[in-house]
Amino acid sequence: MLALYFFILATIQLGLLFGVNHYYRAHKSIKPSIYWMGSLTSSIFALSIFGVGILLNDRGTENPEFGFTIANTLFFIAAILQGLFCYSLNRTVTKKHQVVCIVISLLFFLIFEPMRQFATFEIRTIFMCVVLSSLFVWQIYELSFKRKRSPSRQLQYLQYASSAEMIFALARLFILVSLSFTIKRIDDLPQVLIFFTIMQIVMNTLSYIAIGSYWSEQIAFSSLKSSQENQEIKALLQERETLIGSLLKANKTASTGALSAAIAHELNQPLGASSLNIQFLQMKLSEGQLNPALEKEIFATLLADNQRAAGIIRSLRSIFSDEKVESSKVDLAELIEAVLSIAKPEITAKSIQIVLSVQPHLMIQANRGEIQQVLLNLVNNAIQALVTSSQQVKKLNIDAQHTEGGVLLTIADNGDGIPEASQNQLFELLSSSKSSGMGLGLWLCKHIVTRHGGSIVFEPNPGGGAKFLVRLPVDSEVT
Image (cartoon, rainbow, N blue to C red; front, side):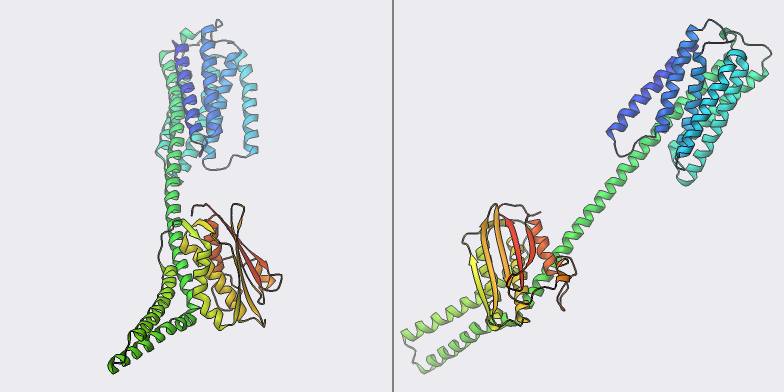
């Protein structure tokens, strides 16, 4: 029956070892302590060797088989490793600590082996109870220290189990000291001593279960923390997208505001012409001198001026419209024409020559408003560079053509160029080579082009000035 108890407890601990190992392999975020797993493995072997030794023992309790030395040494190693686990909860287990524990385990073996051969059962058992009790005290101290800093119900259960192990070990010690006879055979063992021995091993098994529950608790905490961090990251990403959306709108206002005077002048022309034609029409009507031919000419002029003003307003509305971040088929050539119609007054006023080389039907999958903003930023930057340039003939070159897998857009000017010291930080946020400006435009250009699966780079223009090359794929999803 005693051997059966050992085998049953060994089987329970073996099931715990396999179950825990399978559980932790499925949760790779937190690994179990090697000291705990080693202690559990050592205890399983010790229980199994004890069970086999009891069945095969024919020498009684005096001078038992060598396997009893092995089994007791494994029990000692299991207690040492469990102590190291508790120690590792508070401090780092160094190489020095590991070496000391190995040396102590070897010394235990060297001491216990002569005791197996020459000492009585009582002396051997008393020795084991004293040694294990001291290790239990160590474990209880480390657990108390850990629980003060980080309360845990599972560590509390472990502390209770270790305390119970120590109590049963001391109870065995008390019984052996108070015996009035010598135990020479297993049958001579008092039932109460067997009970306390089995209960000590049961408490040891419960301590392993408590440690397994503690690591499960840590995995649960880790999963909860990971979930909270994911929610925080998601919220930050949403906040980032909102901020970038605000920056895009602010940049639209800034870019178009730079052309506001020229746009106002351009709008005043058709509106002023319409006002004059209306006054002329009223005068002719009051004089009764309006003939059909003159009426047709005046209304045609009014319609043309109205369409001209409406075209300018449509171009502005397309820039400031709040579109969803979604892609559609866009003709890049048509977008270039729309942006130039907005910038044309400023280009004309500053005597800037436009050199266009745009292939027709440059269809791309993109968000129309965002790509239009990239074009407006780059054209506006080129105009500003040419306005302050000392060049007599100011040129703005726009080239767009099909390439393998997409289109290549090149916008270049023959201005004074960008200082070499500023070229590496051109596309960084809040970095600007201009005296006025926040360094937002080129950063947003890169952000937009990148999320369309493209790229934007700067090159010095061979004829002087700056050149920006934008590559966009034909088919892409806006990320």
